[in-house]
Image (cartoon, rainbow, N blue to C red; front, side):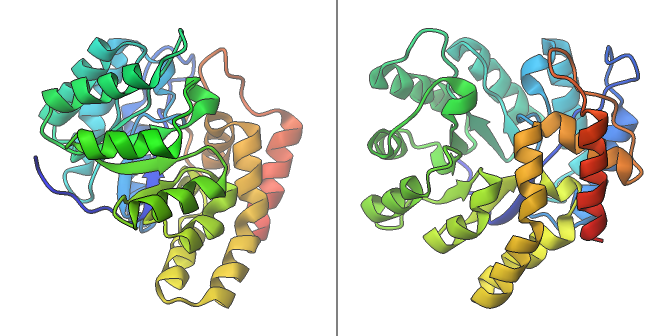
Length: 295
């Protein structure tokens, strides 16, 4: 298995749709990726919640994966979200991402039926056995219906060689403290909850997985740099400056808020795909005001 060390700001890409939301606007996708890279992110993560991966057909998912990886072109590490309802489909996606140059994949177990811990472990083991690149284990019960306790995460990390990173998105900072304590700092973990960014870095997070760099990459990067420099006062000021926008992005829904924000900053990326609605007029005005205070 290839080794990989990722740190810093991991930027989530959108999936831009054509005006009728029936097709993919690859030109806009390329521009959005270039903006993230120019903004100073440390890795690119296509097809997560921000990228509406759950709402794409399989040919669309493949199209976005192949294009994104080719466009990034190894300028930064790419972590492709490959989660699907079944293990077989997750494996197929993971192998596709690996074949097209992904440095890692992100796996979120998705449940219709409630999964036992043995079934969750089996899922990760099966995926890991089929690929030779690292897996970022993703814990986000709000979207997956699966909540993995720290003890289970540690077991998966110890028993599945490919699982080398953890993205924690429960919004519970104690999970991160516990993960660091019980693993004695041996499990690299990444924050996936925007409002916890500062606390997560203080708890030892190696990075921050976020859609925010689509809109405020400089502020995100400056926060991370202040953390590296152990400048708590500067980090605190930078974090609280951007917190209202981070809260708004999360509560308003990532595809809707990020696509509206991109429009406000000169990049048309279409609207979210139903059943997700675009941002309301009132929300659009509020977002415009928030962005205006940060420029």
